[in-house]
Image (cartoon, rainbow, N blue to C red; front, side, top):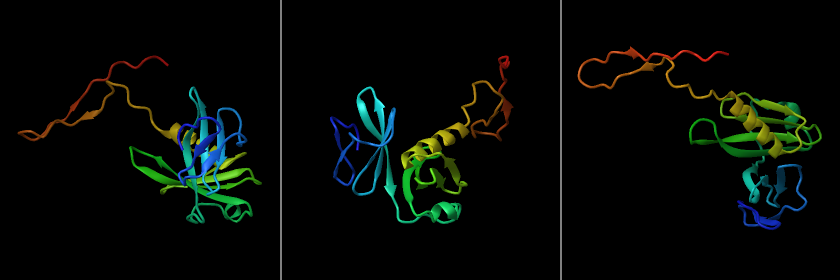
Length: 170
């Protein structure tokens, strides 16, 4: 599902999806398809566009998720793809309970991240991505001391330090 023109889009399953009465408010909305997928919509200059798709899953890996949330009568389970480092997207699992307004999100060998006051699975997805991006280290400014390995040409390599310019005042 990409840009939605008018009030109709199409899910990956091929079914048309309306977004007139979608859940959410502001610049983000969630659309449900009859196949069970949830689409995360974002309002941009060109109108609504789908930024992510959450796929339903019957079960999730048990380690890490709380038994309370897994066993909730209204627990919903989804997964979406997200590149943690680089370009390789990994599956990220979401367990959501509307009655508890709680979600837990887990991927790879990371610990489960719990979120309170969650209104939808797509809300949990956006909050988890925001949390993950907050952990990313900014790129090093140019000129900091760092190890620079010389090219392996000819003799044994010798290391050298690159000088660091003075730090700006804080």
